[in-house]
Image 1: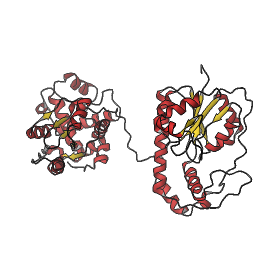
Image 2 (image 1 turned 90 degrees about the horizontal axis):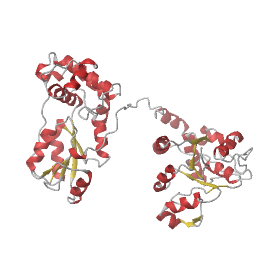
Image 3 (image 1 turned 30 degrees about the horizontal axis):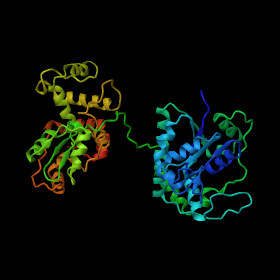
Image 4 (image 1 turned 135 degrees about the vertical axis):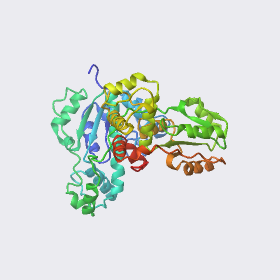
Length: 458
């Protein structure tokens, strides 16, 4: 480290021991932690409305005012920041390399139970002269799941921001907070190497040092709920696809009615839907993000939609386009490296189409799992990721299914004030009704089957 830290932030959550850590730091000369400085409901601590000369109103108008006031202090100063604190200041915190990042975590179940007990008793700190208020809580599995998800997403966000900015953090667990060696190491990492020994604050004691069975009324129900939560995400579908952008230049806008925006998934029934839109009249298809925003502003009540196609049919469309397209080098690479014997001469030149298509489906599985050097083409990327890309600009109002296109688009046209018969889906080739091909398509596109509820047979 070329220069000492000017300030610090403690990323923590309720009932993780952050009060004890703050008390330990505040007992050291020339070190000050200003509580939950960006908690929207208080100013550092309860019953305060001013901090470092900044009022709550001034902080709420511009959180940078308080951040500057804290980090401009000549001493080493900081604050605690939880996942539900003012999000406007997070970028400034993460971008400031002179602000040390301390991450404090605790077993999420212990933290949850402790939080619920604190709410039930209104006892948030305890010293050795005080008597803990006995209480038990009712475990709420849905609430616990939401809490865990919020905290996990926040911690992943912090970790990612640290990684991409080349910063490190000092990671602490709840059990570390009374460890003299760890507390001394923390202060040395913060630049206070003049300190030989740092003792944990002694003015706070654990509030509920009982086993969970004594603190939770529905303990057996809690155990059953926890067993079903799958903390290791054993059923998670891994994704190795690159993130896709919104692809706005491919969008089509129709001025019919209140306005329709078609967000096509490449490899889907874009020709059918695009032809139908043109039949409605007044189509714009040269959007950029700015012009599309302007188009939407001028059409209150507009609707956006996309259409997903069964993965087996979409893979066939990609196969047919590749067989009959002009990309000779790609076909050669598929033949020589990826075991897909695509001949020249278009789809009709393909002998034993089921066998060759099965080889292509196996290539797609490997490509989507990051096992090939070829980039993932938008025509065979998962529809899940393509639509995620759309949503980085604006999510569609409707995701229609090709096999019920008329019904889905009839609903949308009514909402947009359009009186026109919607298009109908086209049938796929009979050779696709093959159990081996259906199985291979599901192996390649399991994400889409799960996300959109596709059946095995198109």
